[in-house]
Amino acid sequence: MTILDKIVLRKKEEVAAAKQAVSVKQLEAGLHFNRNPYVFKDFLLDKNRTGIIAEFKRRSPSKGIINDQVTVEEVTHAYAAAGASALSVLTDVDFFGGHTNDLLAARAANEIPVLRKDFMIDEYQILEAKALGADLILLIAAILTPAEIKNLSALAKSLGLNVLLEVHNLEELQRSICKDLDAIGVNNRNLADFTVNIQTSFDLVNQIPNEFMKISESAISAPETIKELRAAGFHGFLIGENFMKTSNPGLAMQDFARQLISV
Ligand SMILES: O=P(O)(O)OC[C@@H](O)[C@@H](O)c1c[nH]c2ccccc12
Image 1 (cartoon, helix red, strand yellow):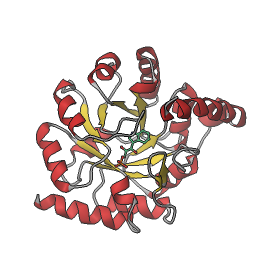
Image 2: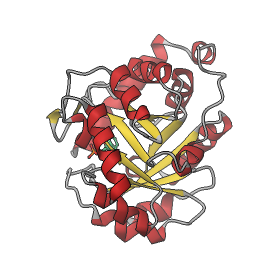
Image 3: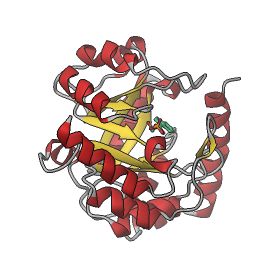
Image 4: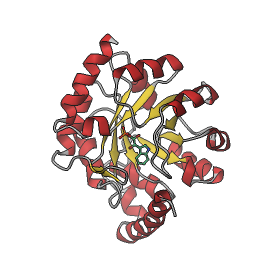
């Protein structure tokens, strides 16, 4: 069994428990359920921003603890001030040390799009994302059938949420594309075995239809890499560990964004 299989098994239990604890009716009565999400594309293409989707990630299955000394409010606020186009907040508890409360905190502290970063397998999680104040959800092709991707993205769209589809190879991309996606992310990390290779992004970028925003995800640690990815056609860059591994992730992003101007 791969780590991804383990995560999905556990996620099924977690979702079942959440459904018992909070009904769909309660979600629909939630604080943010009726707010209008931000349009992800507008922030990605905003010339005054960096295109970076800056991630708050305390730990991961591959790295263990990355940073458990900082708060989601201070870090996400500093990311936004440093020019992030969006924020990515892990809400998976058992494998990434996140929490739905982290998303609520990021929402309250910021006025840019927030991605609910989790392993979405059930419509309930989409409604929950909306109730928590997310603007954007992630669908991971490796754990979903084409029919599931179609249904979950259609539900997200009907709630005004933006949808980011994550793929890792051409086969996933081709079988998963559907009309309700806003952006397609190429994950440079293979979630089954954790190997990373930026080349994955360069290999797939021209296979992504131009109607979608193109995002490169994971293992980005140098401004030069962003310059190359931009030249290849990417609009967005998802960065977590490179910032989170420092004692001041917001400052790390600020330094990175300054260097980006001069590469
Ligand atoms: O920390 P990195 O290497 O910069 O990667 C960030 C992000 O891409 C990564 O956390 C990620 C990409 N897809 C995911 C799916 C689930 C959990 C996490 C992820």
